[in-house]
Amino acid sequence: MPTLRWQPLTTLVLSLIGLGASIYLTITHFDKVALVCSSSGAINCEKVTSSPQSVIFGIPVAMLGLLYFVPMAALCLPAAWRTADRRIHLARLVLAIVGVGMIIYLIIAELFLIKAICLWCSGVHVTTFFLFVIITTASPIVLATGQGAADDDLADLSPADGVAP
Image (tube, rainbow, N blue to C red; front, side, top):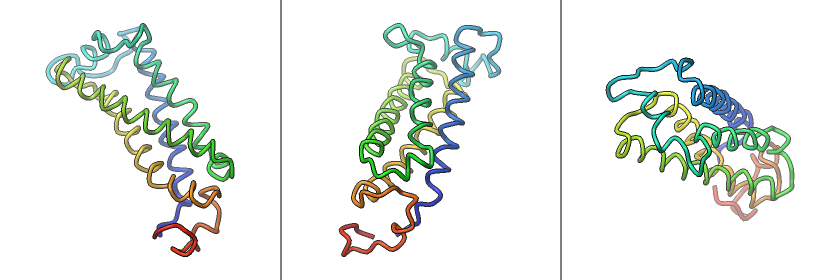
């Protein structure tokens, strides 16, 4: 079984990277002058960030990124990974699933509706995907043991403990 000690810090760093990119994209949603990216051809951040798909239910997608990464950063704090409260681990898992669902929609929108790619948005997509992979691979272990992922006991688990290697 792989060790889980690196996962809390990695997910926290990824959440903070995503939060920073979401803050930047929120600023550029309202002030296009601040946008630093190509504005012509297939890589066209301006076209993506000003498209009709850049707003959902009247909320800029970049702000939805903030609404995703702020709680994700809190849920990825090392203390949150160590807690025995299953609700914290389930919330992190559910949020990761919702996040990857959203990026699937956004990637489809960029490729087929907008027909342009935003590099900043792609950075958020990659960050969200890696969060999803790390969290979904750690969650069965954390939820099965009822212990936080950073506990030393996780390294000693065997199939007899009810967790497959």
